Image (tube, rainbow, N blue to C red; front, side):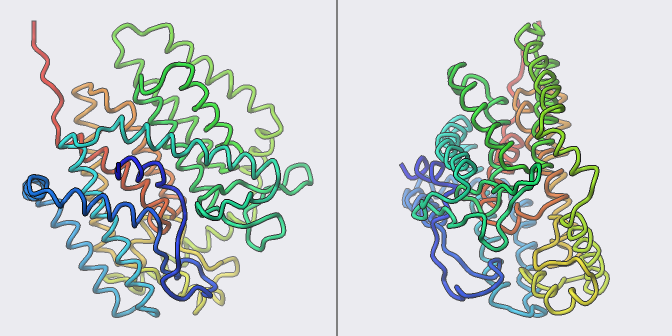
Length: 428
């Protein structure tokens, strides 16, 4: 029951502030989320069972190298407190990283022991996203929130300061949030769901799959997240290419799917949305200059604080302290690059550990599964590439709870397949 409830409500932003609700920088407010509470109950209920505890301890012993890497990373984050401008904010961020690692270990163990299966996770995740996609489309249609604050919907309209909007043919449009902290995070969740649905065949009946994917893709387009829309199209093509080469029959259905994607791209290219997106890539806006200055300021801080960084969750505070006077286009957000953010806030040793972990979970696995022609590559490679490419241009995987849970899901799927070897095929 708790597992199903957890995935159904994973992206609800129902929350209470633990302190500092009046802070002008929301990254510094420690919130307790509904997902944290449900995960806590699920984790506790599972470990009440003595066999489950023994199984988890055996799993930890088998994966001790990875566990030690996690612990060393946490230690470096803890040591960075001493240089923090606001240690309280660093401690809250450290606790969230502890939760990320704990959830990653717990979910991978559940998958390896087949207490839950990937199909179970995907189905319940999708069922939880469907009402949020409908909510997002309603927000775009009405141009304001609908009052579902109980499940974590933000209260906003076009006049809300700092709200994400887009201008099309001189008219300003609201981008959908649903219960997500930003439309880009919403887009990442939709991208993840689409790749999982298409990479795990027979999860739904054919007509139901078409309806769900169409709904999610329409909502993805409504988010106007340029990078993630482009990534979705490219990753679906990669997924279809993998499916084609793994399929012995090279079926007509795969050729139809290739044709449909290219047909959709042709229509999109000449639609108002396609023309507008093309103009955005052709003409850099203010956001591009802001991201550029955040990146340059991040490199500057790494050079000045190379070993332990500036402290967890401290980048926006450093922007306020000195960044505005050094770079003209900065705004009080973390640098939009996950790996650079780790280097800035925790130092180069932590950055090295993060890179090692990525290549262990993703690069090593992709090569191994590709050699064995394992079916899991149909969703693992596109998911891993999506994570890598988007993490180089944004920070939400590391700084926002919804992004944290997406990170946990993607990394746990990869970790699980690294542990379970592919079945042996008998040679004839």
